[in-house]
Each structure stands twice: as structure tokens, then as C-alpha cells.
Image 1: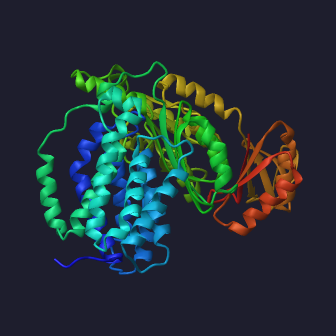
Image 2: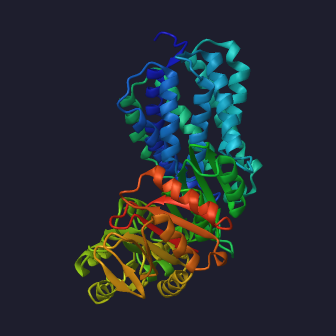
Image 3: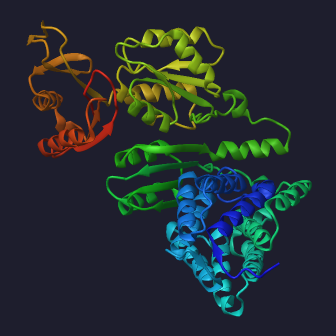
Length: 557
């Protein structure tokens, strides 16, 4: 085989496929090593899903331009990153792309320099880097390849040097991290990175992907020994909740998001830039973290996992028993819902914007609201579809509460209704969900949270009438404050101002304006800007609700 002296976009894509294929074969081995932070999902699976997202970005591409391919891979990895190790892997790929720059292809010297940039960016993405982890392995690879790049023009030879350096660094991780020594394992993330580099090497040496896959199947035959998380006891305070989400175009910018969210937990990996930020934090209070983060923009790809529960299930599995809490609360949810500690949520909402908000906060959504109330059957189907042991329903409209309550006698699942009368109340209730709580305590806490929300709904009168001492003409702008018509006039700004003033805005901190389907982004920002100027003590946010009938829905909290 001819010596390969340069890496272009086509070779890099094939190498990525090789790394993915080899990691897939070794995923269970990597997962079994997983120990810190425990359990944080499964390291091998998280890294595999991150690579899968990166490859999906270039699946239809056959581009020889390395700069374009690495840029797409970087974006795909960031958007699909899972877990601490997956987010760091996405930063390694992002740094590699930055190292490549605008080069169509790179030689060994440039390849080593790109490894060095990858390490730099990955370290920068972690607030408090821990040695003995994937970061340490990445640094060992970059240092050795930079030092040895002048010795060879053969990319395969340099990749062999990289893999050997990774193997040595992985073997040394227990001497750097006490928790690894205690569990008797090497670092899972570092081992996963070494496996990916091995897959790269196989392709660069000329093995076709099919051959790598065949070897992969053979590698799966050996059953890994249960170590890692199986060797540790759950600490008294628990492991907390692994909380992840993305914010696109955060209003305060990347630096402020990172500075403010980092102290809200540990193992924080907050990466990205002013256009998109990926957040991964372990916290004992995910509700507070999520509520704080929503002030920066809409959360996407939200995932909250109870690591204490996961670890107890691992330990129970070792003893052949089911953990008590799992037996009581039923199976974990899937399909994008957020079954924290076995609790799923079904919310009623109208408007694509509100649907997205609820789905990103982990709820299953039933379409409905004013003029379009869902039936009991609609709600029952949604409850049964949620893969959780118990379910909370948020009606978000006074006319839906009774239909929701009928579901309780029609399903075998434990179901509770939090009688939310407006969509903002529903959002506040969902943000108050306690991942570690039971159905009764969550129902009580979420109901209490609705009392802190004041809702203003702005629409136009469909007929002339008199109500609450107001003379209303057809076409007038009217405001309903917590469901009662209290203001009417010819101008939206005028009516909104009076409605906010009637609630005593000095007693609140946040005013959120949800724009309806007929309100464009410019108009929404204009209304929010006006309110920020008039009520300077309030923090004013603008969100897309995209609801019909109500150009604006506002919440004060």
C-alpha cells in the first residue's frame, strides 16, 4: 500500500466511520469502566451517540475539502453531544477543526498541530479540568505527535504513535484519580478516545470499513467484567442529576451563561459560543438550574437523569434484585419525555412555540387550548403513551381541567392533575418538578408554583358588550388578567401597560411576553423593549408562543 502523506476530507470521513465502528464494538467495555462521575449515563454510549450525530452531518457528503468536512463534523458533534465525555469529545473535534483552519488537506506536521489545538479547546471547555480523564489522554496524544511529527511523513505511522501515546496515558489514569484506583479501572472516557483513535488507525492503514466491522463483531464476543460503577457505593447525599441542554443564541452571550451557570453544580462542561451553547452540569437541584437557564432563551434537547437512581439499579442488578424505588415508580420514560424518578408529564398547549417549550422541558404535549379543548380520550392516549410509572397532567386551561380529571379512573397508571388554568402557569409548574420526589409531593409543589404566576392574555373583542364595568366595542383590544377581562382600549401597548400596572409590577421580578402566530419577531421585540423601558425594575423576556387568537400572552413572576 502506498504511503499516505496527507489527510483530506474523504480520508477524514472514512477515518471517522472507522472510529465510530470500532467504538460501537467496544461500547460495552467502555460503559463497564464508567465510574466518575457516576453513573452519568454510559460513557461509551454517550461518546458513540456524539460520533453518530457528527457522522449524520456529513452522511451525504463526499467532499475532499478537509476544512469543510471538519467544520460540519464539529457542528454535528456539538448538537448531538451526550454526557460529560460526549461534550468533551465534541470539543476535541471542534478544536481539531479550528486547527485545520481553511486547509483542504493536512500533512503530518499540520495533523499534529490540529491535535494540539483540539486539546487546547477541550481543556478550555471544562471549568475545572480533572487529570486522569479523557482530557489527560488527549493532551498526551497531542504532545507526543507534535514532538514526533518531524520524524515521519507517513500519516499511518503518526497515527500509530498517537494510539500508543493514548494507551500509555490510559494505563496511567488510575495513578492520577483516586476514584479510579478505588474501583480498579482506567478512565472510561480516556479509554473511549483511545478506541476511536484505534479505529482511525485501522482505516488509515488501509482496512476497509467492512473489515473493521468484522473485527468489531469478533471483539464483542468477550463479555466484559462488571467493574467501574459496580465497585462503588452510593454516597449519602447521592450523585445528583446529570442535566444537559442547548441554548441557541443566548441573550446574555456565552461568557455570562458560563459564568452564571457553572457555580450551580459540579462537573460543569459549558461549551460553544454566542450562537449556540451546550450545557452539561451535575446538580442536586435541576429545577433551579433549568429555571435559571430559561432566562437566557429557549432550552433545546433537555435531558435530566437521576444518577443516584441509575447507580442503585446497577448495584441491584449485581444482586439480582430490583431497586425498591424502581419497583414503586415504574419504568423510566422514553421518546423524549422527562420521566424524572418515574414521573412523566402531559401538558395541553396550542401553538408551535408553546409546544416546543413544553417538549424541551420534557413533557408530552396534547394540542389544544381556547376554542379547541382536547377530549378525555385525547388526554388518556397521551398518558398511556408516556413511558413512565406515574403521570402528571397540566390542563393549562380552565375548560380542560374537568376532562383531565376523568383520566384518573380510566388508566391503571397513578395520575394526578395539577389544575393549571393558563399556559404560563403550566410552564411554572413543570419547572417545579422535583426529579427525586414522588407523585403526591410533586403535585403539591407544582400546584403551589402556579400561585406565583400572574397571566395576562391580550386579544380583540369579537362583539360589543359590557363586562366588569367596561364598555367594549367590537374590535377593541382587551386584556384578561388571570381569566377576567379587566382592560379594554384601542391600542395593544396601552392595554398591556394598564394590565401590568394593575398587578403591581414592583412585587415581581420577571415579565415574559409570548408572541402569537400573527406577531413577527420585530414586533415582538418592539413590545418587549417598550415594556422594559416602562417597567425598568422588571427583567423582560420575549418568547415565541405562536398561539392563535391571542397576539400576546404575558406572565409575571
